[in-house]
Amino acid sequence: ASQPEAMAIPRASRHKHRKTGGRRNLHQKKRKFEMGRPSALCKLGAKRVRPVRCRGGNMKYRGLRVDAGNFAWGSENCTKKVRLLDVVYNATSNELVRTKTLTKNTIVQIDAQPFKQWYLKKYGVDLAKKGKKGGGKKDEAEEVVEKKSRHVIFKLKAREAKNKMDPAVEEQFQSGRLLASIASRPGQSGRCDGYVLEGEELTFYKRKLEKKKKQ
Image (cartoon, rainbow, N blue to C red; front, side, top):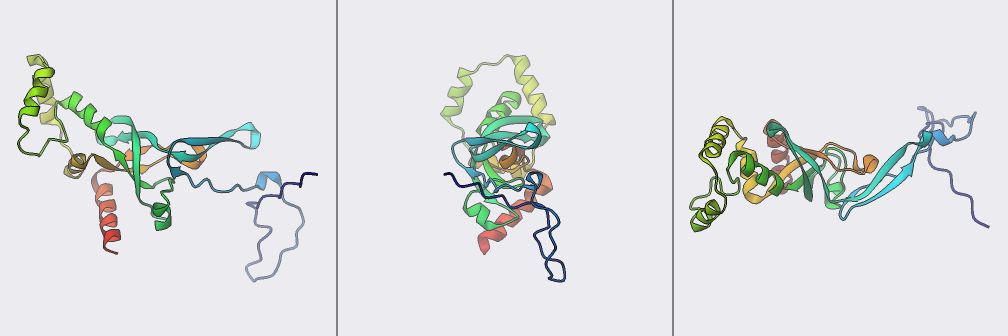
């Protein structure tokens, strides 16, 4: 005979002691709508998502492993699907960084390549080489491959002249990794979407990371 399933820990507070330490009198049993579930603790790895049926027939998608997501570059109004490379900071606990757990507002490193390619197409500037001296023969060879009309060249130059990029973000493109924050809830939606860190927020988290290194 199969054993009956153990009832989950409820989200109601009837099982808790009173503020004074006394025990409560139970006037009703646990209810299924008060049921809590184990946390997903979504990790960085090959995609693994499980559907969970919820109250009212609604579905949650429990992300157990995720390795990519849609990340927005706010100042450039550009969103790309990119690979997640590493977990670098979590305000809750360093344990979540060590185990590479993905939660909302986790700071991660993402692959900069899709944004780099988009920037090159829109502004005609290779962010990986920008700021580096001596492009050499390789650059000339690339220029020969992709010929552009005068109109396109002037259009790209005009765009670049108007554009101002955050120097801290530009610096990250050299290494090919961008710092980003997760805005979705991977354990609930099975998706790991977010945005590239810029401006004051980027400065704040860079400071936090430097502080963590010194410890």
